[in-house]
Amino acid sequence: MDTFCPCKAGKIWRMNPNKKYSFPPLELLSWSKLPADGIDTEADHQRTMDDLVRILGEFNVAVSPVKIHSGPVISCYEIIPAPGVRFEEIASLDKNIALGMDIQSVRVIRWPVPDQSVRVLHRPVPNKATVVIEIPNRKCTLFPVTLRDIIESEDWASTQAEIPIALGKNIAGKPLISDLTQMPHLLIAGATGTGKAVCINSLITSIVYHKTPDDLRFVMVDNTNWDLSLFNALPHMLMPVVTECPKAISVLNWLLSEMERRYQIFAEVGVRNISSFNHRKEHAKTGFPIADLLPAPLGEEQIPDRLPYIVTIINELADLMLVVPAEIETGIARLAQLGRAAGIHLIAATQRPSVKILTSVIKANLPSRIAFQVASQVDSRTILDSNGAEALIGYGDMLFSSPGSSQLVRAQNAAISEEDTLSVVEYLKRNGPPQYTTDLM
Image 1 (spheres, rainbow, N blue to C red):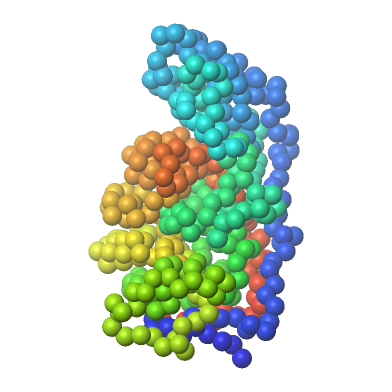
Image 2: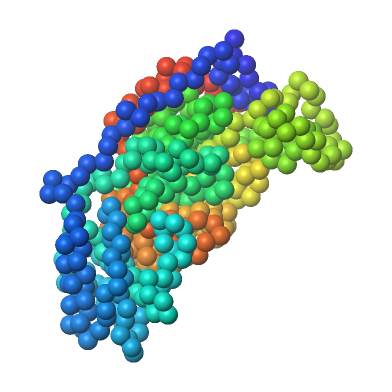
């Protein structure tokens, strides 16, 4: 017989404790595919550096080459401007550089930049200011980085993250893995066809490779009625994918009620957050006696052994904001402000990054951002508060901004095909059907 966690906001069902949970094997995921003509060689990179120095010289901008950092899709070319050459002179020639090299775009940034392989500041030449120009490789494939590349890496195996999510590989070729509990909410935005939907699929799939339904549950809102529907059979689903705007409001209200209920449970037990609650019997700590502030105690039978994390995914935020902007903005703001300690995290995505959709209130409460290619600098500033996303090349090329850091990390998103996603979902179905909450059924 299945057991469940009773709570005022609804019943969050648990898997049968007597049945062993089966994680999906890695063989269900595809490898990355190399281009038919191979990858860029050292000679290819050197030729690109020579072209860069030559093109800048044609505009009377003298520079000296320093170092080349090769990546899976984008490589970094460090140069030292000659005395008297301003950074703005080089940055203003980005379109001319792209034209001279017959590529889509380049991105010019100044030092300091993070050495993304070891996450410390890297200065190649002491006491010299350098300029970094990010240039696409000459040879590239459609899926240069796949989810399997990340999940099979040592970084994923050794991660201590509570909810690890596989973002991709940075321009140094190092896996980019983040902890959703530390983010703690994520905004994803980009133009149509640049990799936003694939990114959402890879984030969901990477989570189910690490968490059971007893550990984490999903709530998904998808007004497109297509992208997320294939996850309906996941045992991690707390309710079927919501495809109607009115019901999305009910879902947000339910999440807020569940959040308040969890805080009441924490106060009764004497803990601060979901992590302390789930490990309270291991550490045997009493916490803070604040239960006297609450109007009514819960009773021992209403306090579960564990509470699952809840990850809420909104696929197209713009549709909701155009129909019921006030309710959505208020609900997201309150959930984002207080949801972290209760174990409720939000991932919101949109392909229309305008100020009417990404309001200052929503942006302030979604501190982690992923930007895919956009049409203009205005759209880039709307998402990231800085330029750069307009110079991306598409096909999963992205900029990641994490809270507490002023640096943008350029990366190639971990791709996953629809066939691989369906294979993972089909495999997980053997663990049993999803046990939905009863309140919103």
